[in-house]
Length: 112
Image (cartoon, rainbow, N blue to C red; front, side, top):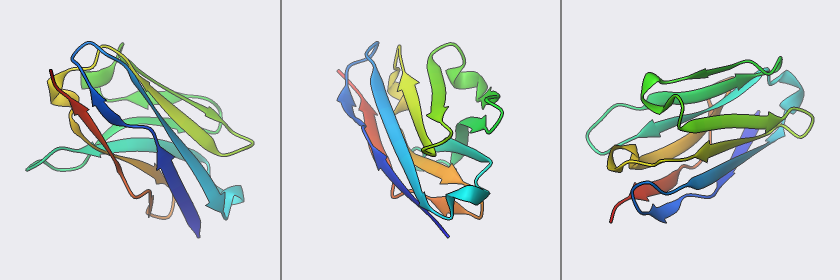
């Protein structure tokens, strides 16, 4: 079993930046990827970014060039640096890992 604890998030103006963190604990030896999803009100949860053990990454088209996912593989901790934030980035952001592991979610609100 894997436990995920997120931190970061909050309220930011359009064009601003935020950084999210997620730390995994428990059966971390079995983790070969971690990532971030988000869910806006009335919308389905969607993949934002994912990082694999070999350091490779994937991003949703909507965040390419603005968001960067990184991680410390030994600590099983990942980060999501979000720059040039837009109102449409407003959502609850969830950390994700194998075996249907999810964090509690952290709210990101982009508004003036």
